Image 1 (tube, rainbow, N blue to C red):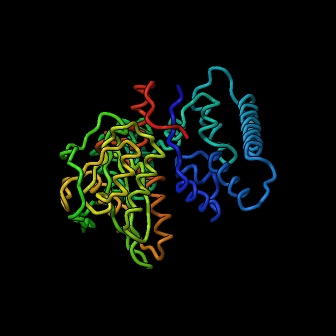
Image 2: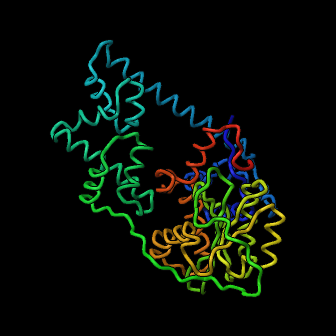
Image 3: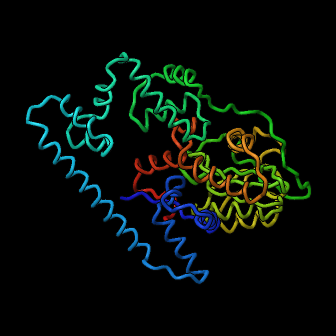
Length: 395
């Protein structure tokens, strides 16, 4: 049974379309965010229709044509490689003969493609080319390049533990964490270190009726959409503060809803809740935990929870320990993004936060609570173990 994907809320689509309008290609965005290039192209085409433009070929026709061209190009290249090999190789030749053929054609063909067609390994070819250094030195050099790639893809935030997990999960390499740490030190690569302390934005309305604490600092969940936590943080920009409200699923630590605005009124948190409900469509009884801030104890927010069949829960005012998981997310956000960037405008901050949450944190950032799996991958593996369960509605 194919796994389902979350529904993409209108705000998510709007941000993607703005990036397309700014010149980013669907293929480029698909590498950074979860939707496929075809999905992004469909949204962009619909946007052009909405503003009165008329596309030429449909998205499906363009994609089909591009795919056929790629296949034809690859078939031609494979045929050319095999033609050269037919005049160069004989049955029973040693791998070194294949390596020589590969070496003579690296300017014309991809090494991995030639190695696959000739039945030898790419690693074997590179080992053959670098006989002078010791085997350990060659392995360290190749491993360091992989480490550099993973470090760069993490926006230079990963330390040795997460790089070690990348090498194991993505590259299938069994290497020691101490070796990874040593190579990172030698290459001058470091992760970011989380800072402590964050000013609370909580302002309690002492006249409001507050919900009981249904979490009790037990920040665990046996499945998605059983327990959510929520909070608000702020981002400094050249135009003033930008406020970010998030909703986090305790099962996977995934950010399932978010909203940004230049204010902290109740609609900020109701918008974040609405996104989460739209994307996940939880069953009645889900617990939504927050602090006793006036936004979360307001009548409007309580009504939104009731309409969605959600049970509100609140911790103590201003106690970070009563909402520790969301506080931990904000600490990571500040360390990995906010403290390392400057935002001239709120719009710039919005786009950067969107890219961090939906392009990095949810789909790719490894989380220690998930066994160094990203929130999205953790949910996918959970779904694979229980395929009869639907985590959330399909788009």
